[in-house]
Length: 420
Image 1: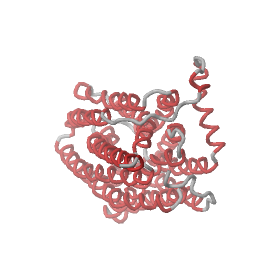
Image 2 (image 1 turned 90 degrees about the vertical axis):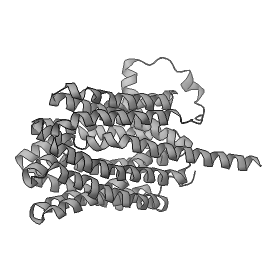
Image 3 (image 1 turned 90 degrees about the horizontal axis):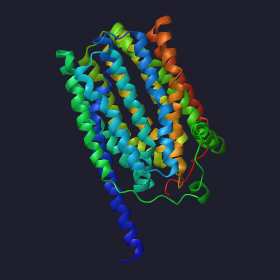
Image 4 (image 1 turned 60 degrees about the vertical axis):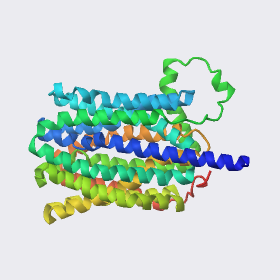
């Protein structure tokens, strides 16, 4: 057997192992992610949280990404991506084991923010592991397939959880403990992944002197701004995602108010919309988005994603007059958009990075989530009180459409060849 054949065989084996790890990570993590989707409704409907607390939760979840930026920044200093991911995975689930002994809505908000902090913190390391273990051509397909199967699991789980919570809302505590325990098993899967050695770091970085606190705080931001300045295509993508993401975050505080006050839906009806309609849209569209990513530029695919997401708040507002059929249609379209958004957001770092270290590209994704999260949710909560939840939904749709149209007009070509 020639050396070339050996390398191809090893590459194929690495792709297969990484595909299985992606699948099992999604399957074991899905129960907690599914239950996490009920948090705003649990807070508002059963724990008596007010609109300010809902808006605060919606704001702090993405805002925590700014601090998680520093966690992921350590990857550029030679730290192991695996230990970074494993610690983040453990810490993001740990607080939920205390749910049976805590009645405070503030604790639930804190646990939710902690979950999102460490989830975002682990993404750059996880995507770097995926990048080192899987070729570009197979990365999108494996990612979309594992995500679609995880969403299919979420459909069943969400319906079951919605029915259980309708019968006894107090059972959410036990469900969180069980879901967190199952999620910890994904760490065993990730711990078994072997990571190829990264390209050697330049000598001047190895011998760098100890950084001051000021340098530690400023350096990740400086590096990100430099990256955006050097890569105009990446900057255009980021600003497009920024505007669309702002629109989606703007409507988040309005959603529970709209669902409960305007539509008066139950947990089970909400579960049907989120799991069946949204999950079906996600599962059916994910393979299509993966094929489009192989054929079109990242900016063109992102434009289609943003336009799809923009239809969600528009269709949702129609449910006031047209009934629940519009609710399910809206969440189906949201699932379609999220299927593309999930791929674009997670794989943009490795795609734009090419043969470079991808964590700094993905780190920009993470920190911009925090920046828009500092403004959009509190603004959306305030506008929901002043204007009404329906008006906020439509305003969020305008931001998404604007972003999609602007990227569609972009002249930038694909950042790098697909096969590297």
